[in-house]
Length: 274
View (cartoon, rainbow, N blue to C red):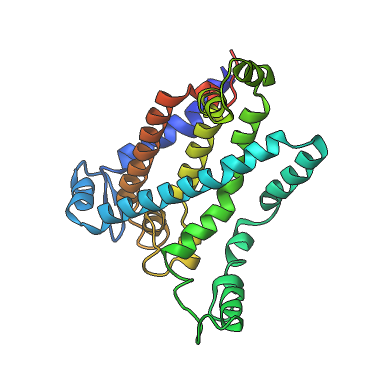
């Protein structure tokens, strides 16, 4: 019963309020209860908003894909290492969680900036004659920073899945004549799929909803859907339209969860036990 109450208070009621608010009308004097589809039509008629939505999905997919490509080999190597070695690497992986999100974001300014470490190295090696401005305030800097921030969200679930893997299954596959590649493809990868799906879900949701990093490092080309959503509540104070944008983001996340459930059971992904 307490769990149901918490679910109602923190999930169901806010979503219902968003749905109701999305049909209201914003005026100079506040929000007016006026049932209308105008906010949804405004989203569809203004190509800027669908384009920003597609850009945010594309950037989130890019961040998720690169994080997966980097994290799986690392997590596999981590799961096969000695206990002392694993402990050290896990601590290094978890270090970003112990620092401020803002600090992690701003730390890329002295690295990618005009007078940053990357440009200094390129000029020292005489690879460029003048500082390169393309490293910062664009989609590249946003993607790179989000990968740095959310990489642990991908590494940890995959590592946990690989660490729980029964070594006897790998030995049995080897005894039956399976090559290491075939063993990985038919045994290791399927059994680690819950961790992979869990990492994909967490990284995509976090990257899709990011707005601090795009605001600080994105420039005009790196603005994402979350920035426009935040602006509706703190800038233009158009809460009804902000509710529409929030519901669209929720719909994207729910769509991701539906797709994820086709590849792995969600209770296995998030560690629930029967």
